[in-house]
Image 1 (cartoon, helix red, strand yellow):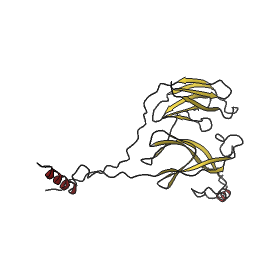
Image 2 (cartoon, helix red, strand yellow):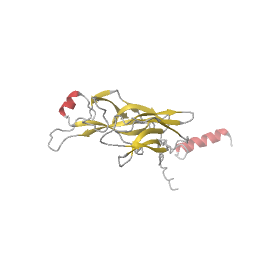
Image 3 (cartoon, one colour):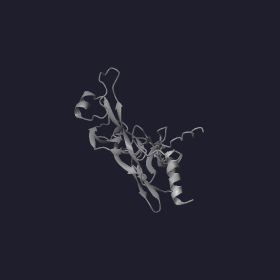
Image 4 (cartoon, one colour):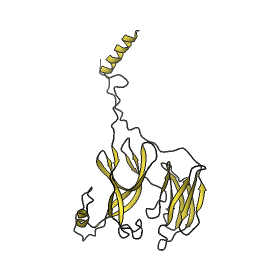
Length: 253
């Protein structure tokens, strides 16, 4: 069979919808953008566990996917892979009492007039988000023993290092978590924790060393402590974002 005949058969097959590429839907590109930095009112009263003493403003940025506001974020983003990054969410919480008479502000409005009109809304630092630029998917990360008011996360590759607080609130731990791993890579007790009387901040951000892979924790009022980490492969899975089209049944002869 000549190459011209083969080429003609391929064209006919494609037109009839039975070629190998006929059922593959094209990838839909997504636009994932962090907006400009804006300053909003922030206080220890509005965020008892997260705000530092005397902190009166918080820098926030909108996370936009295809032009739609998905979340508000704060702080620097960290690229985990060439297509995924993590960033900390900031939550706008309704602080109104049942007797207060004021409606919710516009979702995307941050101007002063909006704050004056709806001053019962407060900002609080929240959990970390994993954002996939290819699929546009935003996922809340569940980091072990993570506490928004205590844990200052330091990222390296797909590892998150921070001082964690046990569910009982009585023990401070050195924690290294890996995205998508079920158990922490490291969990070592640092000290007892007193919720009523503790330094602010409780821990300085941990410091990474690459070779050998090592992490140093700096709990307030104590000497720094370091741990060697056995490096492992990333366990996070990134979807392709392709939508597979179900082939139609062949027409009956």
